[in-house]
Image 1 (cartoon, rainbow, N blue to C red):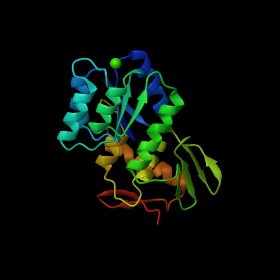
Image 2: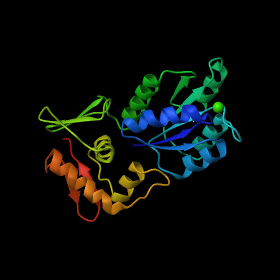
Image 3: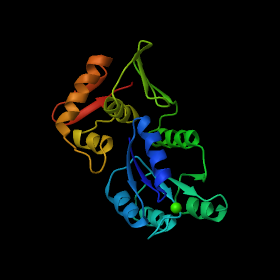
Length: 219
Ligand code: CA
């Protein structure tokens, strides 16, 4: 799952990026409202974390522009402690949730997970795919109850397919959600990750739709 983080405090950016990366998310970071507006309008993010107090363009106006342009990506806003009116404006402008600074990192991580779950219609933090279980809180995967070690990229591929279970995902779409903006997006490597996942989790889990993409069927 790919997240845009728009925040101008470098230390906070580092902390949030580390936190989300550790859970297998890909994070693009921008430090001002103009870049936020641009990337959020042109890249297919699974969610956006948006500081309200951004230089160049404030977060509220960026959010209004996204919503006016029909961009429905879930947005979590970050506001100052005394910024109750910003929170009201932000929610009215189309934010899905908010965090008040300073916040505890585990709470942000939990809100991000909840938003991503809602976005994909997953009610349970543990996604069950036959005998394969993916715990989205920890990124841990087990087969028949036995834990399986996956690399960060394998978890990223599995997580995106699992959150979109029942839908055919093209290699292009998959690569857009597991690589960073300036990352090396070689869609051939996707086939490699899929093969490794099949070896580790069983050949049945991921269906190849020839020439089109991949699908996890949980029904
Ligand atoms: Ca700020």
